[in-house]
Length: 427
Image 1 (cartoon, rainbow, N blue to C red):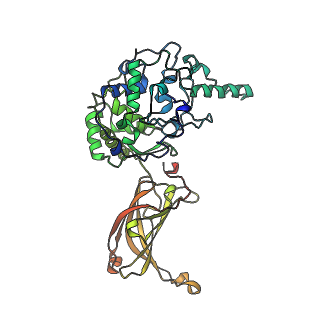
Image 2 (cartoon, one colour):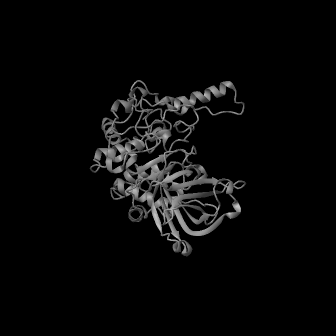
Image 3 (tube, rainbow, N blue to C red):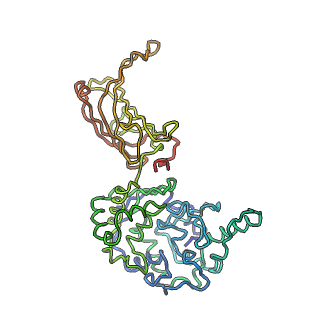
């Protein structure tokens, strides 16, 4: 359901490219039967399980032209989410990619009204659906390109659902579902980043992978194995589709909400974190992590890190320097590089750490005086673009100098590196 711009639901919403509201803040009572029906109707309101007749309305050749998710996406964020790269075909409307229309088509939970859903008198007729599609031909003539562009435009217009659309009960339940806080994407995802391909979904910090494994085995394992699940999730935007279908079911199939044990938002977040860890589709190291990292409780020391491709190969590597102090209060400078030189995916990197001493200040500087001692080892781990952890373990020589093991959380400094994070290079 594309919302009329006059409602200001699109383009000026609170769930932009980053999701900042915690799941705990949005959690509420169990969904009503009406919310559950509305979730099914959001998927496909023509299906019998969704309260429909099981048949398409007259003049509709493809259900995708009238499904809510077809333009708004399973995560309700349109082109700011899993449908960022979804272009138009002869059997489905265009969610926005390729037509120059930057309207995100995102839905703000808690603001939806029946009028926004219906678009009475303002939406396109069913007859305008697939019939407006014109493919680009080999000539790319002005007339052909104009017809193609016109097809895109028609595909973006919200259908007028007041004519042969959802029943009053479906409409009421759609509104209740879209205003149900515990169904908002933020109960599963702490962040949705459409820049990365496939779209990167970062789970809420309350997600528990061990609990997710139990849920997957008990509720999903009877029909789907890990190989199927991970292959499915490798597709663009599939984490939000999984979240919706696993939570609410898929209409007119055996995959019902009851068959899955009436899962909670926590169940779904747990399961997706488990699947991310199994498939490696979660947050990965990337050049966008380049920058200054520190811990406010330890002001006066910090890390300068660079993640970049090796010239000639493009393989990812990193270099880190740690400005800190020894056990006598003298300034010390540690440097680190990956143990394996290159980084092959994952969200953490093991490093070898060195202590550099020797050269003098100014005119007395002589690089021949440099002494590089093997200080020990360490691990840098990141859960997102602004959150990480460091663990450093000194070797015997460093221990003899008074150094001890160190571990603490890291965050970004106030400076922006200018490199998009996360970057598709990591995938």
